[in-house]
Image 1 (cartoon, one colour):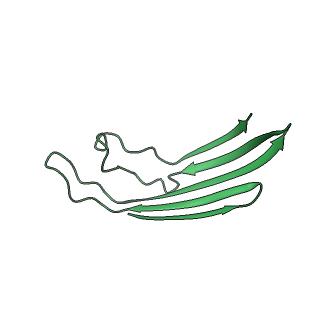
Image 2 (cartoon, rainbow, N blue to C red):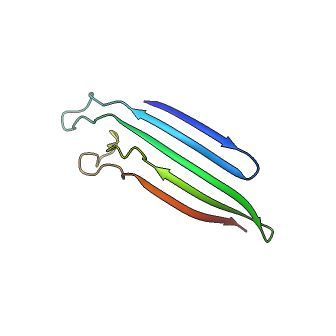
Length: 96
């Protein structure tokens, strides 16, 4: 497995790009199937604002942007259900 993270942050912005490369798994028990390698790229962007004395975070998070089929070898359901495909999440978080 190879993993890299490229973060950047200042007073109002936070970003990160994450890269994960998982090698194929050829060592498995007799009842298991081998798993293929995959790559995963994620992107996170957040803007922090002060609103009425409260901290508000606006964020965008993209996961599995390579849209590779991901089967986590340690998962008991990997042979039936791969990890979710490419997806985006957008949101607002407020602390009060």
